[in-house]
Image 1 (cartoon, rainbow, N blue to C red):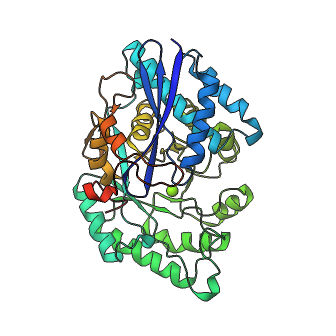
Image 2 (image 1 turned 180 degrees about the vertical axis):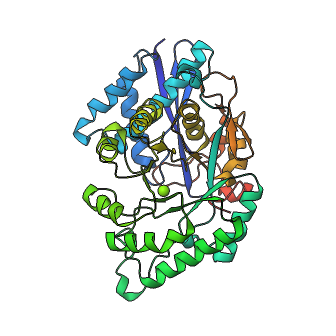
Image 3 (image 1 turned 120 degrees about the horizontal axis):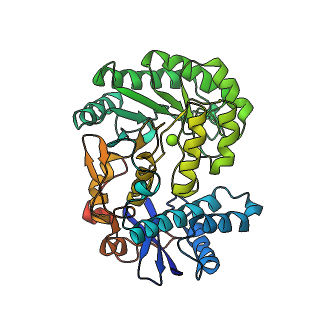
Length: 401
Ligand SMILES: [Mg+2]
């Protein structure tokens, strides 16, 4: 079964949230879909897929590992990470979809079969910086989310300091948390904790924004909230700095969405620098790599919790690994996007009471609804809609509600 074509579709059914789907066709009429969505690099990744197409068309579609290694080693001057592991992820997911369809089995069966009956999810309420109200609004959203059946929530409670002394306080620098910012973040989390009760599971995401001193002070101030984890407390490049944070806080730590392939995880896991890891199946190297990283974490008695703030193909792919992974915590989702997912894929995955349940459908178990994907196509460079004026005209969804 030879690969005959590889086609990227950049579709944006929710404004400012582009999803990159990649369809791989074969000469036996079986097609698979992958995803490597990225918030900013749509043009770069789309051109990368065109290069991958030149390498892989004519290759055997069943040889997933060979395709993985081909892309990784061809781009080894880029160390196989980031842009490269995004490309690998999309192809790897699509080839697993094809293999499952060819064999008439869900991917989770090909990975060894389920170790659980369902995959529990965690979801989000608005972040402090999201313009979606104050702590009381976040608390209301948290309570509504709990009442909808979810058992765990994540939020970023840290205000960005825009005072004159703060510098740029944005992408141009490592941010500092002032005592005032830390007080506001504690108030944000106290409001949420008060709404959902003492036993509901809460995570805090720092989005790799802060310096070491800020991260340590914030973690100590948030200790009474009883968090499951503090995520990416500092920028991710310096493991000695991460060790310094770890040795000075009692809150469990989690990192992973900015780490790619098993090699990025090797040192972190061997040195036991965190308590959870969260690889993203559409960025870390696909289904093959997520499974390998999960096994490496299992050796260290560390749970994985796949990062998943992307489109529906990504969730369907991560779910396949989660079904077979003993050391799973939860899979991430933004449940407010599920209404949009229902328009983009067919059938929608079986989501009930804060979990996704397996089906017997072959491969990923979903197909792209191409009418919807085509309707919301954008130019990958300018991000202008090609077929409509705005996704808002369909009221398809918001980033966070
Ligand atoms: Mg995060």
